[in-house]
Image (cartoon, rainbow, N blue to C red; front, top):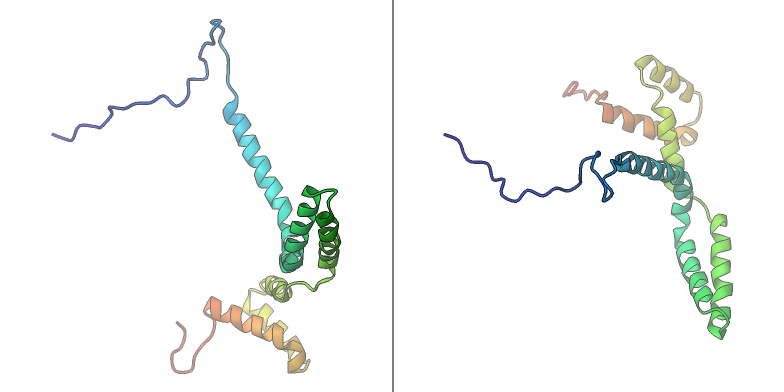
Length: 163
């Protein structure tokens, strides 16, 4: 003998697709297809906004107060306070593209490019090429390569062997 299912409060969340309206006509609802297309459109819009968001990320410290000052000046349009806030807001917003980018952006791009060297033969060729240049020039590339090798578990410690 099993437990009795708890089905006391059943709620119909939506009617079936072929339900009749008040005039008795059958209508077909396409709300599921519409919702799916709206969700897909939102995802594509967010994917389209990712590259500009990466470009703006290091410059937000100038963009945020500049935008706040410009919006406040627009709200207080015509007053003396609006004219006082407008110029600094414009200066902050216009100077944001002139600020240097994030220091980690270059390293992230370098990691992405070096990840293409996945076989041992490719990595050996790359390291042989790097040996032709001074260490201070290739330091960052060597750091990324050693980090990727450690993450992949390709480093052999003399006493431990391979993990």
